[in-house]
Image 1 (spheres, rainbow, N blue to C red):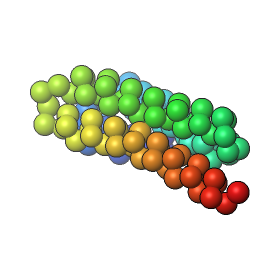
Image 2 (image 1 turned 90 degrees about the vertical axis):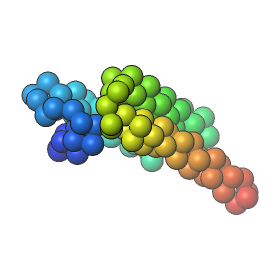
Image 3 (image 1 turned 180 degrees about the horizontal axis):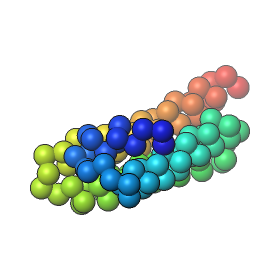
Image 4 (image 1 turned 135 degrees about the vertical axis):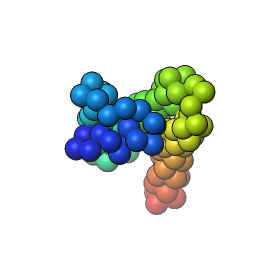
Length: 103
C-alpha cells in the first residue's frame, strides 16, 4: 500500500494516479486477509481466511494474466500470483498436519 510501484513495475504497468490507487486497494485487501490468516483460530475460520487469500491470488493471476496478454511480463506476473495462492494452500496443509500430530 505504501509503495504501489513495487507491483506496478514488475507488471510493466504505468504508474498513474489511478493505477497506484488500484494497487493500494489490492494491498489493503491482502493485508486484511493476511491478518485474518494469522489471527484466525485453527479450523474452519483459518481455512476460510486461507481460502479467501487463495481465491484472491488466483483471481489476480487470471485478471492480470488476461490484462497483460502479449506483454513480456505476463508469464512472470501470472506465475507469481498463482504461486502465492499455492504457497498459502501448502502452508495451511502443513499447519493442519502439524496440529494433528501435536494432538
